[in-house]
Length: 274
Image 1: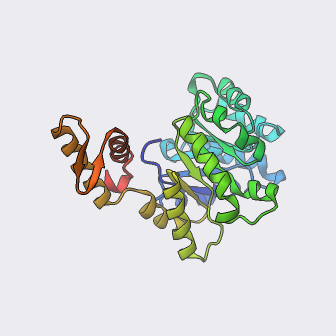
Image 2 (image 1 turned 120 degrees about the vertical axis):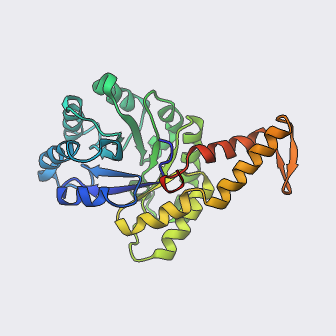
């Protein structure tokens, strides 16, 4: 999942929007078969999502299935198992145990795409380390909407800070990228930028978007800037010249943990920096 900074969600019930979403600067589009689709539209949305893989670049497409504790989720999983082409990632909502990830991986078999469990409940968060460590998990996503509803709070930064922090630690323990929940105030550009900055500082690698106009801000903030990339290259060169020993460079102490961060930064360049 290297280089992934932005994921644009598009309703599975709106196949007319799939190609338009794919033309944005989002690193990945995620066709949503869950929350964005009414119960009587699930079958049509599933068919449209799978059909889209024939016309879109599947490497740039993810599909969010319904929860595996629902009949629609099981139908989604079986349809993907039988699909001729698979998306790059499959997002699995409302995951509360590693067993759910194991079931998805077993059903999809050797062709399984990367799996992205959504942690949306307290129970799921408490099992976060085991979920993140499950084979086949490519990333984890924080589902703040359902989480805030369970807590009885607003979907805002402060009420969810403790949950976000614990989620990032679980993702880090499994060595998988953490994806943050979308910012739902579509007309608050300043609020979006502030939340993306906070998410990046907390350790999130990517943030979801629910409208194309959010993508540019997410990419600009989440992706390393040219100045950050230049600093990383200079630091790695200086560290190598010193023979891998701890040195002082531009007023900072360079040692192995710092170097690992710079190496990771250079390894996850967004497509604008490729």
